[in-house]
Amino acid sequence: MGLTRDEVAKVSLLARLRFSDEELDTLTTQMGQVVEYIRQLEEVDTESVQPMAHVADIHNVLVDDVPRPSLDREDALANAPKRDDECYRVPAVLGD
Amino acid sequence: MSDKPYEIIIGLEVHVQLQTQSKLFCRCSTMFGQAPNTQTCPVCIGMPGALPVMNRRAFELGLKTAVALNLDIPKFTKWDRKNYFYPDLPKGYQISQFDLPMSQNGWLDISDPKGGFEPKRVRITRAHLEDDAGKSMHDEAAGKSDSRIDLNRTGTPLLEIVSEPDLRSPQEAKAYLTELRLLLTYLGVSDCNMQEGSLRVDGNLNLHINTPEGQVATPIAEVKNMNSFRAVERAMAYEAERQYEVWCENKIKLGDSPGGHKTTRGWDDGRQVTVKQREKEESSDYRYFPDPDLLPVIVKPDEVEQVRAELGELPAAMRTRLETTHGIDPYDSDVIVNQGRELVAYYEELATSTRDGRRASNWVQQDVLRTLNEQETSISEFSISATALAELLKSIQAGDVDNTRAKDVFDEMVRSGMSAGDAMAALGIEKVDESEAEGLCRELLEANPKVVEDLKAGKTKAVGSLIGQAKKRNPNVNPGQFKDMCLKIVEGM
Image 1 (cartoon, chains in turn red, green):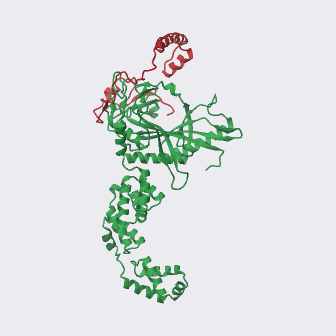
Image 2 (cartoon, rainbow over the protein chains, first blue to last red):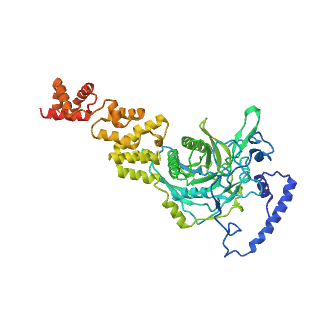
Image 3 (cartoon, helix red, strand yellow):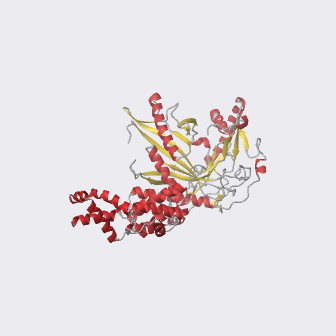
């Protein structure tokens, strides 16, 4: 009992990944195997174990609110597939 | 309240930008209005390997707000990744809080001194700390079909304040927002500037409709893009009407399939309508998981108590105190307190030194606020100090000047910057000597036997015509005193 094809299709849509029917079949099998593998952890008795939010046993790491210089705009935009003098350019965003 | 066969159910989500110098997880400046993409770094534009670190000030401001909103502060809080793709979200996820927010289960009291609705306690589900997205601007110039992305705002600290669906009308929704904004302003945690996006509101609305078969609920709509509290009020009113019309037509209930799930709609301010944007994602679609780059925060109970002790007096308590200490009505205390701490301080100084809270309240609400509006200035920059205005009010109390002429004195003080005494002298206002006033009184009574007759018959209004004549002879005559004197003389006749 791994994952259904519909589940994989839904996750791929949320991840904005487009697959052919064949790829979806392959991924359903492969991802199912991953889920099954991880599922072995369910065999561990966690009855008396506190859930943890982080592997490092430290907390309250905060820094003072003091601004520091930002990236140069040219550097910030350097990797953009499409840009102009000031902004990243992307295909039109509709709605909100 | 309503002759409609339904009840309106509204819950509001408010995003408020916290007033920090730097962003929530990096040290880029949060200053508004800078050139696009000049305030970003590897952390806020989501470069691989960059590590976020929590801004202490942002957390403190969030905590302060949470305590003021009567929210419980759990001992342990953590941050999660909310995953979705959008061009203004370079990381591919928002750092938010899912199952262990920094605060939950609070409330805010709202009321309407004009009596538009019953006072009500609005429950607040939670307030949590998250980072903001960037800004996308659609560029239709030059026939280009691109959107331009400015990431300066990306990573600015936001507090998301979520109310329970306790609001029952667009008016209550507006009152909740007004009171919340006032509280945030008193706390100094945000400038709440809606034009600059420091305060944003989403409204969730549906209807409970009474039918012969019992009560049914309509599908919930989340309304976005409301750029003012007035827009919220109108959008909520429109959406209620719309949902009722749709229900009458198709009878689709909340949870029905198809058509009964939550949708997102946008408010079109130009057309004054809401427009469907998209089907709302399920929470699971965001695939929340704990952000491994951030560490949890533990807040000790004595730290919460420390914050509570340092809150200062908040609007609700202040209104009650002004009413009991200075004897003014809830309507008046509401107007004064809603103008902010500085005006309250001004009013209190005036009320205390004149020992007349009502008179002080009238002058502050009418003349001071009118002048501030005209000059487009704030009380801190107002040229007449509370001490200077108190001098004028004391002159009224002493009978040196009547209320109507005192308005002229006030205008003269505003115009010339003179003290009350100097302004009165400049306008030739001086107290009319008692014997002189009496002489004038007798003279006018003698010349107007008809008035004397009326007065003797108990028609005290008749004295009005004499006041007019007296004012013409000597503009400094105090109408109140003149009237009393006439009545006294007639009595002795």
